[in-house]
Length: 283
Image (cartoon, rainbow, N blue to C red; front, side, top):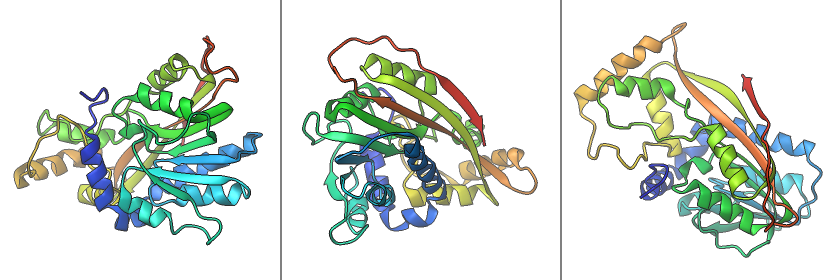
């Protein structure tokens, strides 16, 4: 059973279907990815091998190719239609090396990656500890893991509106920043740092939000979700419940964006005791 309550096969099907519409709707994902890459300005690292984990259509991989001109950039995703778009990024001699695979069972050799970057993909893991162990396995000693993911306040308005309709999960679950930090420590990373930003998108209607989520593939992948079609009456009840959040004529959709980075220790087998600095940013 999934530790996080995520149905990975359902998520993979949704992202595969959304490949053609992803870039048009992925406004938040693009902005978070830009901010993630900016954080690399603060790191002294000259990687030979980089992995973009959960690469989607490859925008992040293209940014890494432009930033590290002599590095090999591997782009991995579980949705093959996304990779078909990612492999077209860049120029002929400077394109990502695309790999279709499961981020919890990476098809990469031990100690083969200097920099592992992941933008808003880790929330789709079914076993987070396995995911972080796999990332550590492929990182070379002294290599860097830098990632973003979503925290539990993400889409809190949509979650609350559906809670007025029934008790089934309609929004995929997200882990707390502190729990993610604990996993980094327990799986053996060095010097982990976590912080969070809170961002809000606005929509004219709840249907506009639902349409954006579908276009990027971020539909409900909870294992215990209701099967079958959502009835017209229940959809209308959700819309009415969401209206209680309307402010200045628009409906908010909140996102809790968690940033994390940590290093593979020089001695990856040594036990470590680490305290994690945590920051919360409003923006």
